[in-house]
Image (cartoon, rainbow, N blue to C red; front, side, top):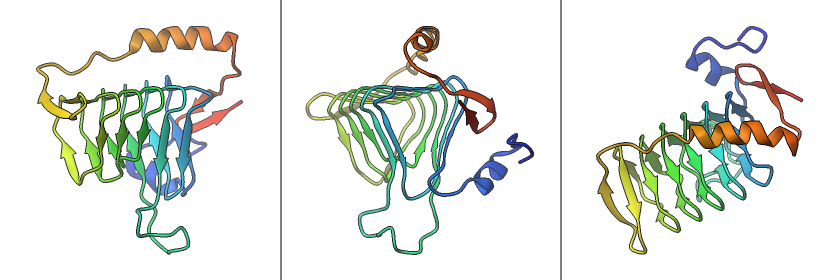
Length: 181
């Protein structure tokens, strides 16, 4: 990295330290959302929407304590994902164009590929890779594959980026991975 501009994903991951959170441009984080990099850094891609009371946490596995000398695990979140009100995500790898709906809970050992929807109140806390375009929905958290991936929330993001400066102090991205007030 030279003056905050990194050139490859390997370089980015090499230079970040546990506890760091790297935001990419066009990502909107509600002031009441919580993003916690406890067990390693979190890299958040471009165009994500993280709504009120959403919790994204890179936490230690249940059998590991913070005092244990373990290699930090980087949590990577792709582009154009939506984390709706009150959801919890501990997934270490999230692809692109996913929606985690209100009050849904995604565990640490889940890999969310791309185009998936985790429905409201659904809990997914398994050791698995969720196939592309999977929808998990309903009180029984049933599954199906949709034919098209969800539309990116670009209109909502554009609206929020236009309206939020009127009500909140925003941090502008200066160079890849660095923010300033």
